[in-house]
Image (cartoon, rainbow, N blue to C red; front, top):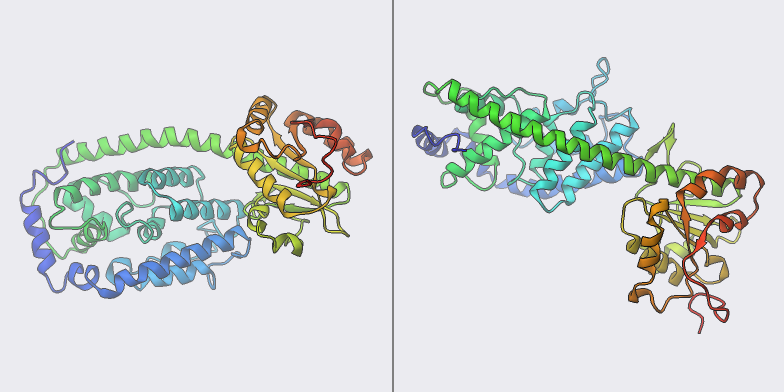
Length: 440
């Protein structure tokens, strides 16, 4: 496809005029020394939002939240971002944006920010946008691109009314606010426009966004556009984005179903452990997940026993999916890694971290909980040379079907680990002479 502005010879001249204009946003904002300095603090602020959502400390109001602090910093970025916080302010009559009172939506928002903060590829940003769009959170839309811009300024352009209006005026497109597919189509056109005028603009999409902002505010008059041709290009881009979104939605649905299954299995193990009288630890990165009417970690330990937390492997142990812990002795009785679709290898490694970090026979019950059709994968991974010298790790495979069928009976009539051991399958025989993990 030809660049959107290649047939508009005057565009380059207008951009150069804009750059030289003392009152234009290039001089007053893009070259502003404080602009770059704010990127780091905004990034730290977004990390604080993610942490608070993950730990269920975010609350149910915008005012006073970590998100308000971040958006205040963005809104202070002079003209282009003036009013960027308005879209996130809580509207009680409309109950939007619905990321304050709805825990599931809040978690989805946190996951969206987390993916975008940590990603290392442009495609990850697009996938995260498709995923959050699939959630259909009321009142939540492309205004969030203003957050993404400060994470990845070369991949995610900001968006507001003036930028959209300027883009439509320059290209003859018909972008409308409030829809992610419209934003993605505009982004595609902006990347083409930026590539066509790279020497006058910047890799940082803030320069182009600032130019479009000034156009949208009516600072510079534009000649007549080529009407139907521009609209045809816009419609083609929009259809392409919607086709990509349909594919991404199917992938997001499959991923969400897998995630739900993983969380559901953790809840089974949580409830069974509590019924058998154990304290239960839920992986730190899963504890705040919404489940049922509350959180996955409801009724569970809020912190690991001190002797586990201070161990060198403590950080890895915190991420084991479920631990059953003796209430009085604080010893780990059983550890469970749920491997629905993820790597069996990583689950075994976390089990080893736990085994190496604790003492005594009470820590010799390790379970990989996986779908029935993954038993061969479990055994193949444990047979790898990397694990050839850790045969004393009493690892057992616990199929979903066995846990599903027998967990209620074990909870009602069982005692200790007898019932769980009865339905689990040893992965490797334990030599008689080995009494404890790590024994000579």
